[in-house]
Image (tube, rainbow, N blue to C red; front, side, top):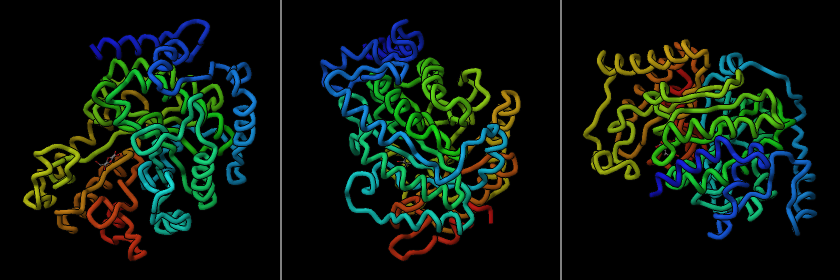
Amino acid sequence: MLGKEVMKTAQMFKHGIAACALMMACAIAPAYAQQGVPTSGATADRDHMSYGADADRVADEIKGFNDFAGGGQKYVEISAQDEVAQMGAGINVIPGWNGFWNGGSTQFKLSQIRKIKEAGFSTIRIPLQTFGKSAMHIDAQGHLDPKYLKKLDSIVEAALSAKLFVIIDEHDFDDCSKNADACAQILPNVWYELSEHYKNAPSSVMFELLNEPHDKIDAAIWNAWLPDLVAIVRQTNPTRNIIVGPTHWNSSADLPLLKLPDDKHIIVTFHYYDPMTFTHQGADWVGPEIAKEHGEVHWKGTPEELAKINGDFDKVADWAKANNRPILLGEYGTYAKFSAIDERAAWTRAVTKAAADRGFAHAAWEFDEGPTGFTVYDSDKNEWVEPIKNAFLGK
Ligand code: BGC
């Protein structure tokens, strides 16, 4: 039943209706409006939008938040290949569920952005949840909350002044993968808004369209959505590098299924957590087989274990060469709860090397999630988890 609905949405997304140009949301908005899901007020052309009674308020908000200054830096086009070559080692920071975004408690401090640069990282990836389970930052007209954008601006500005590359990553992947129809309506709005807002940012700011599509977002649907999502960004950001990954949680095994639009400013991303029984040992969100492991699974860096990583990365490099796309390993890391720190560091070092040897940029998962998480920086002690940080930096 849902499968059919989703296919229908994919078709609408792909072809739209003439009057709506790129924006499939206007084709399906009425159905969702009845269900109380925020609907799009936008059409393809910002200058000709109609927001009904809210027009003035929305216009003011857009005007007020339309002029991200870009930390004093100008936009200069850079090829996807050159940007990846400069991105080097990165780190994921302040994911959408962090209290920073939602007015809850947080250990995050803006000053930590500079510490990231000083430690030797060159890139941050910011996993945003604009409409996901942790909070709704988008209103009934499909517009991002200006206060929320201000918070995001503060991070982007701090990163730019520290000369870090910045990936703005839409991370509502779980909600989207459960209900592709609803996602197909909201996600384009988010990209209209973010693209408009950051159109003057320097090219070191990149957009990642959606983290880890999976489940209801299969390859057919994802491939159908991509041209429209890219076209939305291209209206305001004709040459900014956009990051796109394959389905099945950005699995490299799905790279052959990925059909990219004919656009040279695309960086392809994948995530690597193999073997999951080691990297996610004891993690309860990835299924009982992995949750039951409490320290019994080891990673020693044997020739077989290293060959597995290198074999997996060779396949990605072959695909990248055949398809002429540069690669970002956007997430990798190990869950701290039950695994020995030296084994975690060894795995991390091996994966960092596999990526760097092949010219992939790479980003750690993630800055700080407390003592049992994937943490690289311990905010309680105000210090890096040195062996893990060094392994992500290839040391
Ligand atoms: C998810 C996190 C998870 C991590 C490792 C990320 O993409 O958003 O919730 O901890 O992957 O599984």
